[in-house]
Image 1 (cartoon, rainbow, N blue to C red):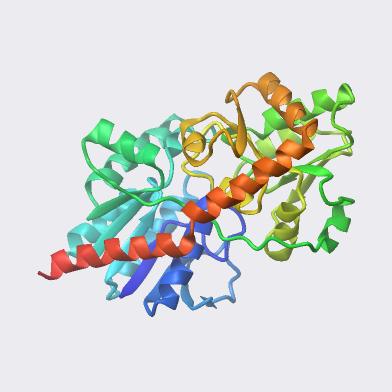
Image 2 (image 1 turned 180 degrees about the horizontal axis):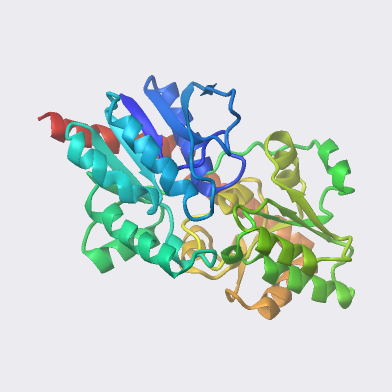
Length: 378
């Protein structure tokens, strides 16, 4: 099959669950012998990179503003795709998927697929108009493509309850490489087991401000047992929020912002962390959370439904979403119980490897493609 992915910022993934999802799925589809193309934005993927892990990268421009970056790039990619002979066009996220109506009209023999990653209109960075557009995109994502994929049972249930349409539920996955190496940690003066880790884009709905506030209070009460807080990630059109976070952490040498990390540096940060915190107020199915499980880390997470689906009481501890005080209490509980943290991490690892394999996920997506193409060709 000749397959194209549209809607992601690009690959290799630097940050963002959608980008990680596309990279992991696309590379596996390419290994299976498919011709795979990924549309990438010039402000994300290096300009001189045209092939990556067997995937051909198609560079197109975008209007690089918060509100127009994704939709403008998706428009250019969609128009470009009309002049190619793709078997499958796979749109990512409800905003970009709003343009799936174009190939559905003009490329009737092409399988048009959309993946619903999360309810983006809940993200606080968007104004009222952008949220209205995303809600319209949600309807198109559900009704227009030949098949809609939801990354969690929660989203699949939501789609059925609201629209009476059945999506195929195929979760996100994880692919991790635990290591005993730690040489990258010296850059931030870290040692194995000496820090609490959070990984994700610095966007308000990710809830990092709750985590910083909770950690500061524990530090003021001398309850951190010399643990540090390491926050991995950067903003994306959220400079004001990033400044807010750094102002909140100002003067705290034990709160460390590493920026975006990839490859071996990120591998070592995950592998050597004491535990992982996921404080989001809104998610689809967090890949960073799944990866933390795969690394064998105990998880402290906000009790949103999407997180609850992936975790259980044996491998994690939850706190009330948006409640910094409850987060603080649960965090000090984990800090004071290292034996429990180790046991929870072992159970988390077993659970992750049994349920969230990218190899299995890519095969399930390939079956969706083939089923739609068989229908169209018959």
